[in-house]
Amino acid sequence: MPGAQAYDLVLETADGRHILFDCPTAIPAGQMASAYLKRIDTLVRADGKFGLIDATGKPVIPAQYDWLNWPQQNPYSPFLIAHTEKGWSLLDRTGKELLPPKYDRLFGFTGNKVIFQQGGKFGLVTTTGQEVIPAKYEVIGSYGGNGASVRQDGRWGMINDGGTEIVPPKYSYIMQFYGNRALVASGGAWREGVGKPMLAGAKWGIIDSNGAEIIPPQYDWIYPWGNELLPVARDVERMIPQP
Image (cartoon, rainbow, N blue to C red; front, side, top):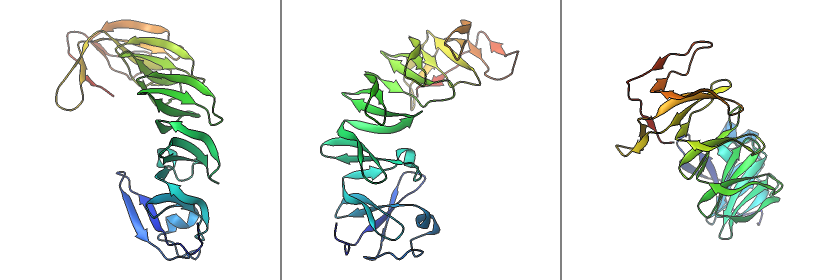
């Protein structure tokens, strides 16, 4: 990319909108659009393509991608997700290709693995290209301290940090862990309504971080707080929105 090329500076707002700033052909250090831009490399757009420049305006990654951003919009990440007509790929901050552009979509990291989409299903791949989980799940959630929830054939299970299933997909829903416990639902039905479908009529129990049932699903609701004693309810209807 010629050194005299003009760029647009690209900032992403909290609500996901992009703001473009015209900037000169050379950007002196300390005269960026904001103090935020002084500290890190900056996404740029030129002729409809995205690249990366450093704080002096020197190109780091040529503006050759249809889309380019950091995973989870974290500008301090050592990785970037890129898109061209060939597909989605993973780069390091120098522009080196870590994962080739063969994926239908890359969705950033869960734990230390990259969520990818292929043929409408989701899997996990390492930054070295090892597919830990093939594209077989309908949903892969974010990793907490005890793993990530997954959905397959409409049922929910859990995988650990290594991608091994610790809970096979058998529950109607699994909620986020509180410490080493998580609420699980069995039965019930997803009702269509305003906004997301809602799970109603399920029975709730508790599993530990190994997937063992501490309390089998039997209550209409369990309030997920407390240490030794947990409030439970019967003969009530609790509805949970679909994630």
